[in-house]
Length: 392
Image (tube, rainbow, N blue to C red; front, side, top):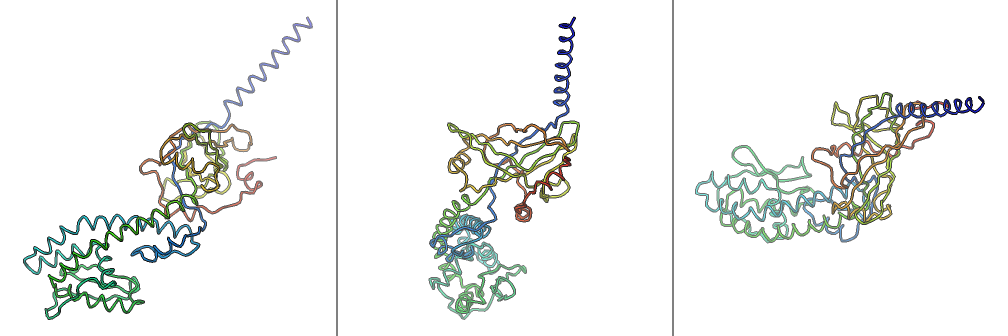
């Protein structure tokens, strides 16, 4: 009798415990986390610039001269300006023979003006002309011919530039910061007499002198891009984009701390702490910063951005991480802490493993919004708990 009573009591306790576990498991915060891709963002920091980089940017047609210690945003701007100018110079080298041939073959003034317009609308060729005049290697006008094309000097834009006006009321600029360079302004104004009068022989000689200048500029801007790239990589942070779906029956709390786990091929996993920072607003192109935690109702989904806390130069095995990213020889997943509202309890939610490489087309937000939504906001425990609805 006593034994039977004990067995029944034990079975009742076990059934209650198992039933409670099942109920708690079913009532847990349930999330589906899908990583969409990875990218880099320059940290809100400054970095040293070597003397060679400063000297190269001082010689550049387009990049701003960098200081010994420079804001990462300016280094980032110099890097992309250099890459763009290198590509444009190479295009100019490839296209110039056909453009010059068209101008040489023009049989009427109107045709010559149209051909000149095709040349001067390319900023790389215009920059090469300014550099050639600056170095006094382009032939000057011989004078004595009536003006065919009007050239104006504008001091309201780019701190002084020339505008070459063509007959259809369109024009292209030449030079910049000429208000601070009176000697160059005067030399360029004199050279532009060849354009005003369409001095064909002199212009052809000038255009044929441009390829070496374009080749030199392409090499210079490639070197700027090569030097700034490792600086940006070292002082950047990994960004992760993910979609999170709440397929549970209760409001879900997404906590700010997360862990990026990367497994390079043939190496141990690398774990990097992250912070969830922003949420995409489906009604606009802007991102909304996360302060504290994010509450996600049942059956809702949200697109979240996370950033690694350390910069790449501060991550152990950071070089391995970078090489695996570039070679696409690693997989990665994100581990989040997700709970029901008003509860600290919850299992770590893991995304599926995905290739550790660039995101898919169309996934990256506008970089113009990034600087305004990534402040380093301290997350006080009391404020985080209040936002999560936790009570003691």
